[in-house]
Image 1: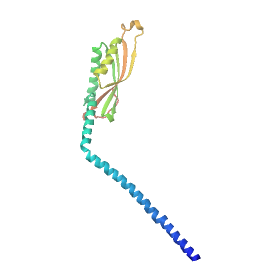
Image 2 (image 1 turned 90 degrees about the vertical axis):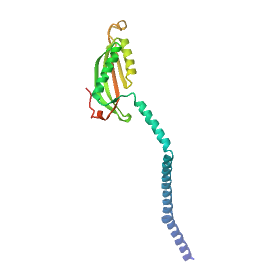
Image 3 (image 1 turned 120 degrees about the horizontal axis):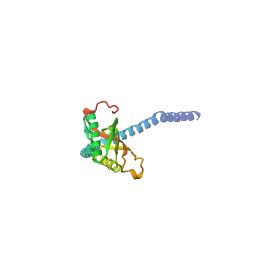
Image 4 (image 1 turned 90 degrees about the horizontal axis):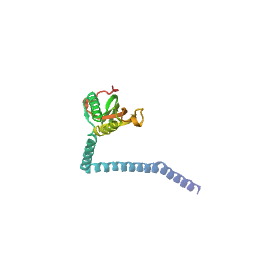
Length: 195
């Protein structure tokens, strides 16, 4: 009877060992393979969805490209950065002159890139002088006529004469602006600090 119990215990131990070292790893491998198969099936389903909707995807891509082109339209396409600097200075001087003010300082401080937008910019310090009403008008005209200009800072210095002398003495308007543009291949030369 003792031999039967020992045999029975040995058989149970062998079955448990087989379960532990053969069956459990095999079931774990099956679970891993099933998970890998599910991942591959999802990838295949996505790929099939892309192929099935290729026309709609191309149409949406075309709409996005058109919207991006429309969004970049206000920014001039520039081949010569130095010419753009000069044209911007002349444009600001013309706006100021029409508004009854004058540009005292136009300093191109730095060139930069807005790579995600496909744009480049130049930071400008500009100082204008003139009657207060003219400076306010010129500031509005800059915003309207130079849609590629982003005014970052505005500082207005009034004459010392107080409220009674606002129209008699010229005020000073200091602007810090970023002038954005779309560089062409010719304008992609190494950028440095401005003049």
